[in-house]
Amino acid sequence: MILELIFFVGLLSTVVNARSTNENRKLHEVGFGFIPIGQKPLPLIMSFIGGPISTTAIIVWGFISLKWYFVIASWLISGVICRFFIEKKFNFPLNIVTLLYSDFLSIISAIILWVAYFIK
Image (cartoon, rainbow, N blue to C red; front, side):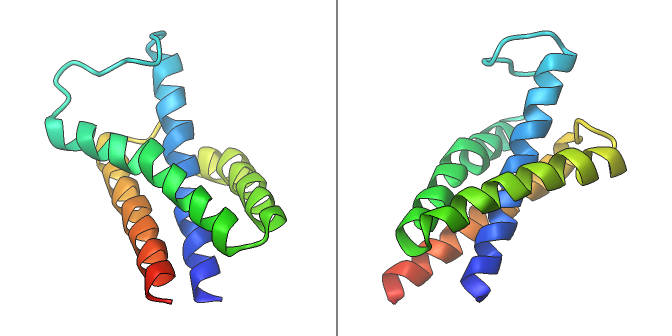
């Protein structure tokens, strides 16, 4: 039960990250390779590790350890929560500091899930 909760929180965090990054890209009317001027190296590295890498790690762990329909349903529910609750409540796109904390949460979730998988 605890690992499923960590999976869902990590997945929600990665969905919020991806949605905020996409909205920021649309706001500045730039392509997918956009790096803001003055972007510090730590947030840039953390957004890469906390974005596509941790998303892939969490999803792969979910397909290995959970039922496939739970992973798909969780991904859809995370998208709905992000779209209708988080985007409405918070100023979207999120600022760099909030995204950095969300990246840390995503990375920690992925690490915990994989460590628990290999210990088990």
